[in-house]
Image (cartoon, rainbow, N blue to C red; front, side, top):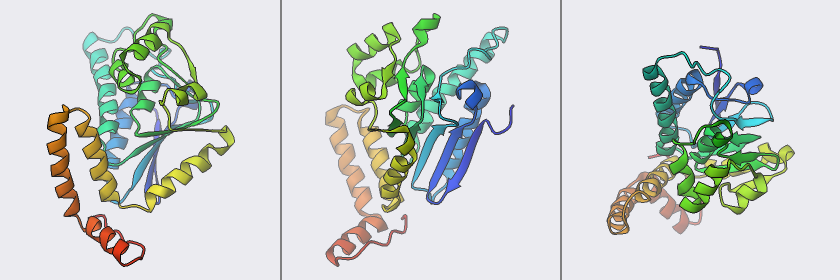
Length: 260
């Protein structure tokens, strides 16, 4: 495995995860996938972080998808299948991670990189970024990310994007509500920092429970989701930070969070 394929750096209340293959447009191979899974495990184990920031090194690409140039077509079918399954674990791992994942999209987010971006909870993109399920252009199909795309834009638009391999500009992605904010490339770091500063002022346990509640309820039927959400509210109000937040509001002071 190449060293430092994925950088994991603690930055105060944040964990910054960077795919570090700028010369390959931060393309994903099995080693990157394994390193991303390790980063997810580190984030899950860090009780005192408030969020994860996911990005790609350099200014050309967030992630250009699978590394076709490094694809070992001579590998056994079992090994190839296992590699694909690991990427599915990455997508699900970021979705299920108990801390919010903020995508800093600094360039192309294409093919599997598009799916990786959509696995983030919030996306802040440079105006030079592009997005798209471009697999069909090289004779492939975005099988694993197809449901992720449909979750965001609906089945009809998802099928259009996958059939044509259309690349979306950042402005078009914003119009489709695929991203939360688009800023000039020179202002990307400031925009990400401003957003994460807002999160850093909040209770990590509250954000964690909120993400879990929202994500789980979206997979349920409405008649099942509402009782589940009522139960989550009961769990939430018993936390020390919920009690502290209410008390601070009544006493007109800033809350002192304990992450409990």
